[in-house]
Image 1 (tube, rainbow, N blue to C red):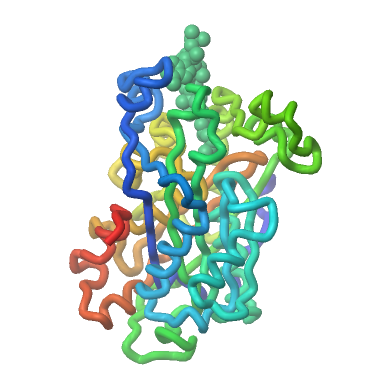
Image 2 (image 1 turned 90 degrees about the vertical axis):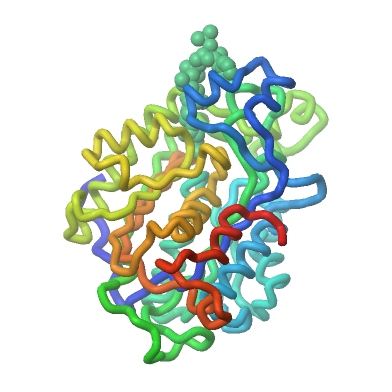
Length: 382
Ligand code: UT7
C-alpha cells in the first residue's frame, strides 16, 4: 500500500469527548485455566504477558457489556442519549448474526431513532468504527456518534483449545465522537470548553488483506458453511487461529501502518506521547515498539489484566490511561489495531477535553485523578 493514500481527515474538526468502559466482575487467572487445560501460568505469561482475564456471567451478551460502557461514555461526555445520531458497534462476538448488536445498544441507551450498525473487521473493528464515526462527523452527515467496542469472546472460544482459550477476555469500551468544541448535549459552540492545543482526530490508515482469511476465523455458522449438527460436532463455531502466522503479520503491520498515518498527517514518530496498540500479545507489542524505535514508557498496555478483548481493547486502554493520568490535552496519541480479515488500522489524534459530564457532576476531570474513570476501567459493577 502506498504512503500517499488518503489525505488527513478534513472537514469539521472532530474529537473524542467521552469515554466509558465495562468489564465483567469474574476474574479467570492463568492458574484457573491450567486446571482445565494442558497449560501453565508460566507459559502464558512468558509467551503472551497475560496474567488474567474477565469472563462474563452466563446470560450476558456483548450488548449487555456495551450498554454499560456506552452509558458511561455518554455521561462522561455530558451528552444526552437523544443527541446521538448514530451508534456503531465494533465486535467479533455479536449478540446475533442479525440484527446488529448496535441496535440493542442504541435502544437500551435511549438513543431514540439513531442509526445503528455493526462493524466486522476482526480486532481492528474499533479503529474502523472510529474512522467511520470521524468521517461522518467531519463531513456534517452527523453531529454526534457513539462508538462501542463490545465483546463476549468467551462465547466463541473453544475452551478445549489451549492455543486460543488462554488469549482472550470479555469487556467493552465506548467513546463519543463529536465536533471539537461542541457543547455537552447539543453540538453547539460552548465557551467553557477549552480546545487549545487539540487538533482532535488527525487521520487514519486503514487496510486489509483477504488472502489471510483462513488464518483467523470462525469457519461455520455463516452462509459459506451454515450451521448443522456436523459443524457443531466438529467445533466449527469456535474461533480458529494460526497463531504463528498472525503473530508475524501483526509485528510487520503495526510498524508499517503507524509509519503511514504519521506520514499522511505530517508528524514524526518522536512526537507521539502515547501509543495504544491492540492488546493481543506483549511480545507482539514489544517487537513492534522496537521496530518503531519508540520508548517503552510511551506504550499503554492492559492485556496483563484483561487479555485480548478484541474490539474493546483500545477504548478500555484509553479509559485506563486517563484514569492513570497518562492522557493530557494536546498529547499526540497513536491508536493501532490489527486482526482477522486480515485487517489493520491506525488513528492519529491530539487528545482533547473529555469528562465534561463528570466535571459537571462534581467528579474530577482528567489530570485530576479521574476517580470516576478508575472505577470504569476496573469495570466492577457499582
Ligand atoms: O487479536 C489479534 C489476533 N491474535 C493474535 O495476534 C495472536 C497472535 N499469535 C500469538 O500471540 C502467538 O502465536 C501465540 C501466543 C498464540 C502462541 O505463541 P507462540 O510462541 O507462537 O507458540 P507456538 O504456537 O509456536 O507454540 C509453541 C509450543 C507448541 O508446542 P511444540 O509444538 O513446540 O511442542 C504449542 O503446542 O507451545 C505449545 N502451546 C502451548 N503450551 C502451553 C501452544 N499453546 C500453549 C499453551 N500452553 N496455552
